[in-house]
Amino acid sequence: MSRVPGRGPEPCSGLSGEAATPMGILLLPQLSKRVKKVWKPQLFQRELYSEILDTKFSVTVTMRTLDLIDEAYGFDFYILKTPKEDLCSKFGMDLKRGMLLRLARRDPQLHPDDPERRAAIYDKYKEFVIKEEEAEWVGLTLDEAMEKQRLLEEKDPVPLFKVYVKELIERLQQQALSEPVVVQRRASGK
Image (tube, rainbow, N blue to C red; front, top):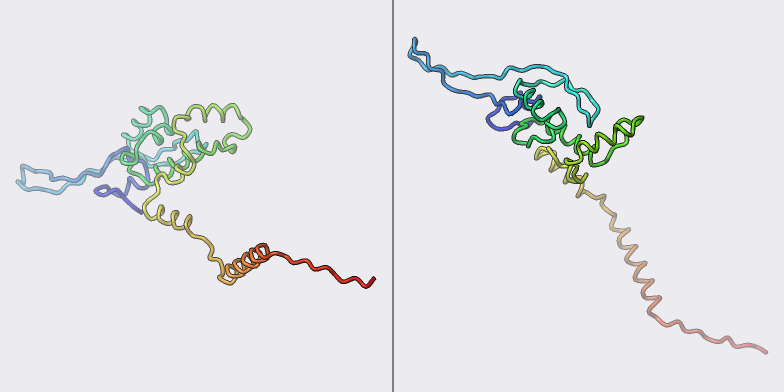
């Protein structure tokens, strides 16, 4: 799993709200010694609902993340508005890609029984709509992007005999069309 350099493993699995795991030196005057100290954010397990994906997620978050979600007026707005550098999370970027793809496709599976609610959701998040081709690439790691590009460029090889047969048929057709056809009269016996 790829991580942002200088950050702990927790931002990859949950939403840390830009909170890194800072390290530093703690000075203890009574011991006149320097002690290495790692400050870790307090993590909470919360259920967050995505209106676009119509799904509840059980996510590990920090208080800062919950505050940022409140500032953005909702979980979906937080994920869509926050840039990659601030999300610091593979999970967050995967959510963002899923949301952008659903918005780009105007997926009819979102509230299939309630078209008014579906239209209201798409209208609410219309500022985030991008082309589907672009949305497919959002949040991919370098390895995932390279594999996706390789699959796009990969074509099934065509056997050479089929290529040569096709060329031969084309040549024969061109030759037949380019040569004048000589029509001879038959000698009649009458």
